[in-house]
Amino acid sequence: MKEKQEEFIKMVKAKIDGRNLQYYILTMGCQLNENDSEKISGMLTEMGYTETQKFEDADIVIFNTCCVRENAEERLFGKIGEIKKIKEHKDLIVAIGGCMMQEKNMVSKIRKSYPFVDVIFGTHTMQNLPEDIYKALIEHEKVKDVIDVDGEIHEDIPIRRNDKFRASVTIMYGCNNFCTYCIVPYVRGRERSRNPQNILKEVQDLANDGYKEITLLGQNVNSYMAHQGADLESAGEINSFAKLLDAVCKIDGIERVRFISPHPKNFTDDVIESIAKNDKIAKIIHLPLQSGNSKVLKEMNRVYNKEQYLELVRKMKDKIPNIVFSTDIIVGFPGETDEEFEDTLDVVRKVNFEQIFMFIYSPREGTPAAKLEQIPEEIKHKRFDKLKELYESKVDENNDKYLHTQQKILIEGLSKNNDKMLTGRTDTNKVVIFEPETNEKIGDMVTVEIIEAHKWYLKGKIIH
Image 1 (cartoon, one colour):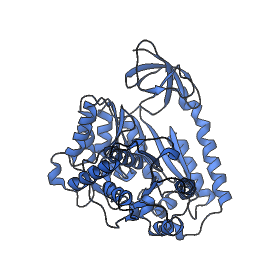
Image 2: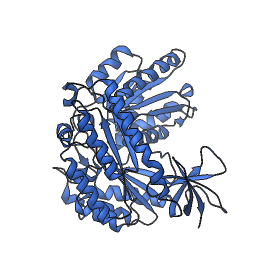
Image 3: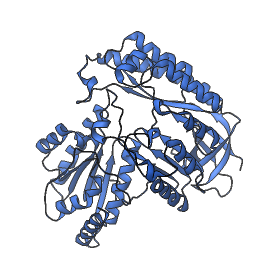
Image 4: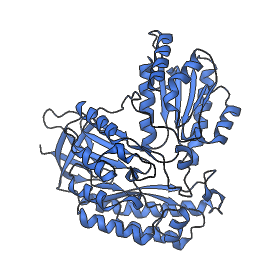
């Protein structure tokens, strides 16, 4: 496959022949989508295209789609409408890929309503993009490159990173959980884990290139190597997520390790132990709750209840005293009563989450929950506002605990609101701004004392 990909990359590059052709990628969705876009960018760069931040200037526009929420569709169709006007006056290739293109009804709608789209590719065929572009560019063919079966894992796809010091590394693909509200298993396929040696080589290469922070990615990241069919023999000693974490932490040059998105049911004791003993692992754990009510959790097919979730949090706090949590919560799942929603608020009070990503439930065609009786939108929004109010009431209190503490910060760049200040994040993902002291530069790790706490950021002073 790699040889075929390289052949088409060379053929497109020869056709471009040094012309200054540009590409624009719009990424919709999660960090896995962002990592896919970095690979798309890598292939386009190898083909001779250069990136532009304005799609009006592009010669090829690629939409990397998400289908988790309904507003993603509305956003995509709006952007396609804008592109249509540009394509009427310019020779332009339009390609749409990602999760949404694994939905047959969406592909049919694109083909019928937007026939000017040149390439449609799915989550399992991204590696074919050079061939798809060749067919559209040279043969003027309308390409549909989508397969329904679970894709293979393709290593060595060119990648162009968006950051020079922080990088994400996908360790597995797909999901086996089939939560009743979620379309992901249907569009990303079943779980497939990468060979650990390939993962470690990628992380080592990043460390050699000066990267300091790594985020390990997976739809259900802590089920790495746990699913049926994982090639445990070829994995050698690294046959679990905990062992992979330990191995990544041993790589010199990597100073911070994060991972998303785990599932509570796969938070085994060895994973907790790995977090506790490895100082490099960030002490904010993303632990998706979705709902705090046991009945709703059962209807979501989450495979844990309220008490089990709280016990897991207690166990982790006992083992790792400085740990904090972020979470995902869905408001307004079909059939959720006011009393059941109160259970969610109860868990929020007890855990005291550092961050909450809140979502109003929207039905996704093809999922079991979409067939259930839906809650009126006004009730969903009232509950959302109530959750938001509770979370925000705790922000100041949570921020105050950072005052006069010393935090290890990776300098990410200049503050967006004050170009005389540097910015970075704590181990627990809090934004910190601070004045440079001497010759600090982007990518340096510094120790900062927190001197002020504001609602959405902290202010610090460099210690060393």
